[in-house]
Structure formats: structure tokens, C-alpha cells
Length: 557
Ligand SMILES: *[C@@H]1O[C@H](CO)[C@@H](O)[C@H](O)[C@H]1NC(C)=O
Ligand SMILES: *[C@@H]1O[C@H](CO)[C@@H](O)[C@H](O)[C@H]1NC(C)=O
Ligand SMILES: *[C@@H]1O[C@H](CO)[C@@H](O)[C@H](O)[C@H]1NC(C)=O
Ligand SMILES: *[C@@H]1O[C@H](CO)[C@@H](O)[C@H](O)[C@H]1NC(C)=O
Ligand SMILES: *[C@@H]1O[C@H](CO)[C@@H](O)[C@H](O)[C@H]1NC(C)=O
Ligand SMILES: *[C@@H]1O[C@H](CO)[C@@H](O)[C@H](O)[C@H]1NC(C)=O
Ligand SMILES: *[C@@H]1O[C@H](CO)[C@@H](O)[C@H](O)[C@H]1NC(C)=O
Ligand SMILES: *[C@@H]1O[C@H](CO)[C@@H](O)[C@H](O)[C@H]1NC(C)=O
Ligand SMILES: *[C@@H]1O[C@H](CO)[C@@H](O)[C@H](O)[C@H]1NC(C)=O
Ligand SMILES: *[C@@H]1O[C@H](CO)[C@@H](O)[C@H](O)[C@H]1NC(C)=O
Ligand SMILES: *[C@@H]1O[C@H](CO)[C@@H](O)[C@H](O)[C@H]1NC(C)=O
Ligand SMILES: *[C@@H]1O[C@H](CO)[C@@H](O)[C@H](O)[C@H]1NC(C)=O
Image (cartoon, rainbow, N blue to C red; front, side):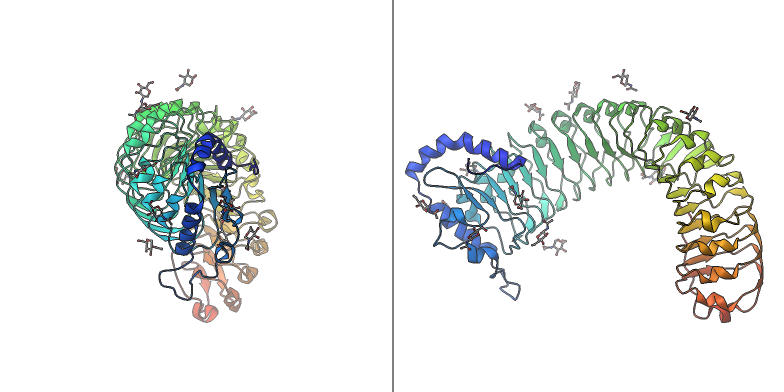
């Protein structure tokens, strides 16, 4: 062959080409190539003019000058021909060619066409239903245009060679064709459109399907149980949509599945225990639905899991104690905003997840203590969120082992005792939420040299005493400081007012004393300040001048 490409589509195209070679040679005797020429010229005419013909008209498009009849069309940019005689167009790739206008229905006269790639242009109007007549088309890529109208039923029901179709990121509307008959199809993507209606159950007849992307539409109805028939499926992306009903148990039959995205729908019912059969699952996204019941213990068997996200559902009950035991590759475990209960014992099993990067269990009903095993979590852990639970006891000193932590949220619990010195030594920490507990003790005087990366710190509503260390002003990137409702005393360090990036400062309800200095006006970035209920004196309006805006200061996560 004259051309060999290291891409799947091209190899497919070669295979299809070879398959049809003998038929092509037979046909060549009867046909000439003038049909192809006429089709290409019709395509050029439609895709390089805009209906308005205004200043934006695409008349200077590269193909206007390049596609000229005085040279063989096989040499035109984006066109490739077969080697039969006469040569016929088999491959048309005008991806990112700034095409405007519409897709000519005459394109369907390119009857030898195997691959059509018009991705990333500004083509508008409807997808011509005549494209469904291209008998040899294996790849149809129209991703990233402005196409509108419905998906022609002929494309889903009449293309026996089609292997891969990508119509995503357009403005396609109406429902998906209900009749689907694509005997060779491997990938269907219609994501990011305006599609409504149900997921056609007929998809289940396409037993060669490996990838389905329907997310970012307005699809309704339920996830068809028949999808469990698609034994080759590797990627299934159905969110965001407006799907209802329960996750079908038949999902558990998709044993090759690696990626399941059902997030941002209105799904109800429980997580089927059959999901534990998905031993190849790497990413499971069920967040923002109305899923109830508990996390099935069978899920612990998904030993290839990398991301497990069930945030914002109505899950209840304890988390299986062995959750992480067989998930060595787990990087992100997100379970916030549910009604999960029981202890945090499962954290010990997560010590096996050596690449764990994010652990979110905030906004649940977990109780008991923060286990010492926290200190055994991955050294790669950057985000640890436990806020808004019923955690008692003290903060384990071993938490300070997690030297990669960027963000730590323990607020709205019932934590007591002092903040361990190990925590103040978390050098990379940018966000520290410890507010609304019963923590005692004081802020170390050298905080400014320990926590140099801190941007947000809230220890509001605790029982901290002592003074605010002068060294706070060395944390040059500090943006939000909330130490309100504590028992901090003495004067506010003068240097605090020279923090250049401070946006929000809440010190209300403490025992700070002294005179408000004129230096306060140096807080150029400040947007929120509350110093009420202290023992401060002086005139706040003269010290602050213009700076008297108040807005809600997000003090916890
Ligand atoms: C394409 O084929 C159709 C039907 O055979 C015909 O009506 C049309 O004129 C052809 N288009 C071109 C550009 O040859
Ligand atoms: C059209 O583009 C092709 C590929 O870039 C180039 O080889 C050819 O010389 C161009 N022809 C004309 C007439 O511009
Ligand atoms: C069409 O085929 C003829 C041979 O039959 C060839 O000479 C000619 O260059 C082809 N036309 C184009 C535009 O490729
Ligand atoms: C079309 O061309 C683009 C840019 O060269 C390339 O990335 C893409 O893979 C091509 N499409 C096909 C189907 O070969
Ligand atoms: C899309 O096409 C434009 C030119 O029209 C190009 O600059 C851009 O890089 C392309 N984007 C992608 C993702 O291919
Ligand atoms: C189905 O495709 C064949 C050619 O492959 C074509 O003749 C026929 O018109 C198409 N039917 C529909 C409904 O598009
Ligand atoms: C796409 O659809 C949206 C919503 O209906 C509409 O606002 C937008 O103008 C459409 N864009 C195009 C290019 O048709
Ligand atoms: C299930 O898949 C088989 C092929 O694996 C196919 O023959 C059958 O029609 C499919 N069943 C349904 C209900 O789609
Ligand atoms: C799933 O597998 C079970 C057991 O093999 C079978 O009974 C059931 O019909 C399958 N469901 C689907 C939808 O294929
Ligand atoms: C969870 O249940 C409560 C009532 O029990 C309901 O108000 C809430 O909307 C549910 N949340 C979701 C995400 O379905
Ligand atoms: C996990 O897998 C093992 C081996 O396949 C099986 O014996 C066990 O029952 C499974 N556990 C659960 C909870 O599904
Ligand atoms: C932490 O890991 C060490 C070494 O693997 C182990 O000895 C210890 O028991 C673990 N601690 C907790 C609290 O799980």
C-alpha cells in the first residue's frame, strides 16, 4: 500500500479496503471517477460558503485554492484514493480545516469512501441522511461542529461497515434513532449534544460495541437492562443526563468494563452487588444521583479500581472494612455527601492503596475516632476531607506523616485535645479546615516558618488560647484566616495588616485587645473582615476607610 498509518482507524480502513478490493476492480470497469469529482466539488461548494455570505464567508478557505480541477483530485489536500483504476476516493480528512457552511448530501456519492473525518470545524445545518448510504464507510467523525437537527436514522440502521461514529460536541437534538443495526460497530459517541428521549434498547443488538458515550445530553428513561448483553463493552458513559430508575443488575455481566460513568443523573435504587463481578473496572463514577442502600461488599473485589466516586447520593450504612484491601491502584475515593455511618475503620484497609491521592468522606454520619491508621495512608495523599461527621477523640499525631497533604478538612466534628505539632509541620499544606470542634492549645509561635504554603486556615469555633503569633505574617500567600470564636488574647500582631493577599479575616469573638492601628488600611485585597466582640478599641471606620464590605466567608469544606 502507498500509505500506512499507525492509527486504528487507518488500519481499519485498510482492512475494509482490502475486503472490497475485488469488488472494486469489478466495478471499476463499469464506472469512471467523474462521480467522485462531482461529489467533492459539491462538498467544497457547500462547506466553504456561509448561508449569510457575510464578512465571515469561508471563501478564502484552503480547499478553495487547493481543490482545483486542473490537477487530479487524488492529490487534493485531505483526499486519499484507492490504487485501483480509475482511482476512487477512500479517505477524506478535513479535520480542523475551518470549514463553515453545511455538509453536502452529495458526499454520499463517494461510494468507495471508507473514512470521513470532519472534526473540529464550524459546519452547521443537519447531517445529511444520505450519508447512511455510504456502503463502505467505517469511520464517521463529525465531532466538534455546529451541526443541529436529528441524527439521521439511516446512519444507525443501514451502515453495515461502520466501526466508529463520533457525533459528539454538536447541537444535535431530538431522540436517538430507535432502530439500531450496525453489525460491526465498536464505538458510538454522541456525547455533548442536546439529545432527548430514551437510550435505545436496540443498542444491545450491537454485540461488537466496545465504547458508548452518551453523556452531556438530556436523555430520560432508564438505563436499559439489555445493555448487559454487550459483552465486549469497555467504556460506558451515560452522564450527565436525566436518567431515572435503578442501575440494572445486568451491568454485572459486562466483565470487560473498565470505565462506568453514570454520574449526574436521577438514578435511584441500590448499587447492584453484581457490580463486584466487574473485575476490570478502573473508574466508577456514580456521583450526584439519588442512589440508596449501602456500598456492597462485593465492590471490594474490583482490584483494578483507580477512581471510585459515589459523592452526593443517599447511601447509608457502614463502608466495608476491607474496601481498599484489594485495590492497590486506587487513587481517588470520594464518598462525601451521603448518609454513611459506622466507624472509619476502613481507613486501615486503604493503607494498601499506595497511590491514594484523594480521600473524601465529609458530610456523612461517620462516628468513632480518627484512627491512628490515617498515618499509614499513602504518602501521596494530597486531599483528605472528613468534615461534618460525628468524629470524636483527638487528632492522631500520625496524621502528620502525610507529608504530601495539600488540603485537610476536619471541621464540624467533635474533636478534642490539642492540634498535634506534627500537623503544624505539614509543609505543603495550603488549606487547613479544623473549625467547629473543641480543640484546645495554642498556635505555635513559629507557624510562619513551618507552614509557608498556607492559603486558607480556619480553626473557627474551638477553644484555642494564647496569642496570634507574629510569624503569621510570614505566610505571604495567606488569603483566608478564620480564628473566630476562640479564646485568643493579647494584641493582633501589627505585621498581620501587611499581608498583601489577605482576602478574608475573621477574628470575631475572641479576647484580642489593643487599639486598631491605621495600618489596617494596608489590606488592599481584603473583601471580608469581622473583628467584632473583642476588647479592641479605636475607630474601625477611620482605620478601614472604604474596606467595609461583608460577604459570606466559606469557612469549611
Ligand atoms: C449524487 O447521486 C444522486 C443520486 O444518484 C444524484 O441525483 C446527484 O446528482 C449526484 N450528485 C452529484 C454531485 O453527482
Ligand atoms: C494541495 O495541497 C497538497 C497537500 O498539502 C499539496 O501537495 C498540493 O501541492 C496542493 N495543490 C495546490 C494546487 O495547491
Ligand atoms: C480519473 O481517472 C482517470 C483515468 O480513468 C485519470 O486519468 C484521472 O486523473 C482521474 N481523475 C482524477 C481527478 O483523479
Ligand atoms: C485526520 O487528520 C488529523 C490531523 O492530521 C489526524 O489527527 C487524524 O487522525 C486524521 N483522521 C483520521 C481518521 O485518520
Ligand atoms: C481546531 O481547529 C482550529 C483551526 O480551525 C485549530 O487551531 C485547533 O487547534 C483545532 N483544535 C483541535 C482540538 O484540533
Ligand atoms: C441503505 O443503504 C443502501 C446502500 O447500502 C441504500 O441503497 C439504501 O437506500 C439505504 N436505505 C436507507 C433507508 O437509507
Ligand atoms: C445550539 O443550541 C443552543 C441551545 O438550544 C443555542 O443556544 C445555540 O445557539 C445553538 N448553537 C448553534 C450553533 O446552533
Ligand atoms: C444479545 O447479543 C447477541 C449476540 O451476542 C444478539 O444475537 C442478541 O440479539 C442480543 N440480544 C438482544 C436482546 O439485544
Ligand atoms: C447476565 O448474565 C446472567 C447469568 O449469566 C444471565 O442470566 C442474564 O440473562 C444476563 N443478562 C443480560 C442482560 O445479558
Ligand atoms: C436523599 O434523601 C432525602 C430525604 O431522605 C432527600 O431530601 C434528598 O433529596 C435525597 N438526596 C438525593 C440526592 O436523592
Ligand atoms: C470476591 O471474589 C472472590 C473470588 O472470585 C469470590 O470468592 C468472593 O465471593 C468475592 N467476594 C464478594 C464479596 O463478592
Ligand atoms: C501501620 O503500618 C504498620 C506497618 O505496616 C503496622 O505495623 C501498623 O500496625 C499500622 N498501624 C495501624 C494503626 O494500622
